[in-house]
Length: 225
Image 1 (spheres, rainbow, N blue to C red):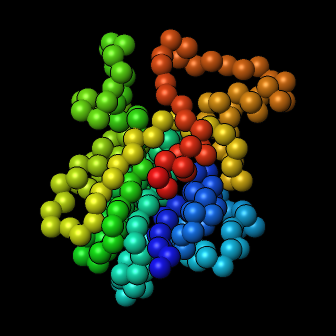
Image 2: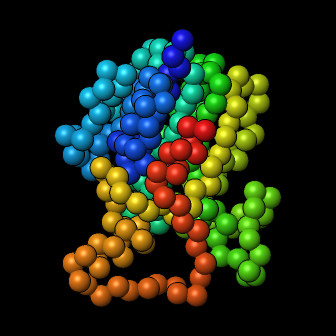
């Protein structure tokens, strides 16, 4: 029997690649995305993919319950991603990155009886460390931005859930780079390549800081594994 994945944020920079890779890995996929950046032409047309253009908070309970009762895994990628956009649109950032997700997790606690709930968090949760020792899962979290503070809040909420039927898994992703059919050029390496292509000056910010990077395709491979 083929397993079904609910992918929230299926049309984003990572989500659009993950959707294709899940289908290639023999999963059925239900994708939910608000398409705030439009570009509906790129949505996957595969018969194994069902797309719903909606904000999670706009679902009727009966419709969301039906979906959650019939999926094996939930992957949560959606949100306003990154420090600049959540700083510029603080209220929208908190609503999309906290309120919507908290309400959804509460629904999952009641109605999702599948295997895994995979939540995509960020390495920004660690903030700036004063020494050169690498952080790990047990390191103290010191979020500096509104975006990271929201992620830490959700991590704590998810890990403190009691009496649930699913396994919460949290990935604190590094900064992504690489080609996607829903491209982002606000990511460092992607921005460098764009500027180099157009023969613009490449500006290095915070040149003395260390930041981890990971190719977007490897994020997709990791989630599927």
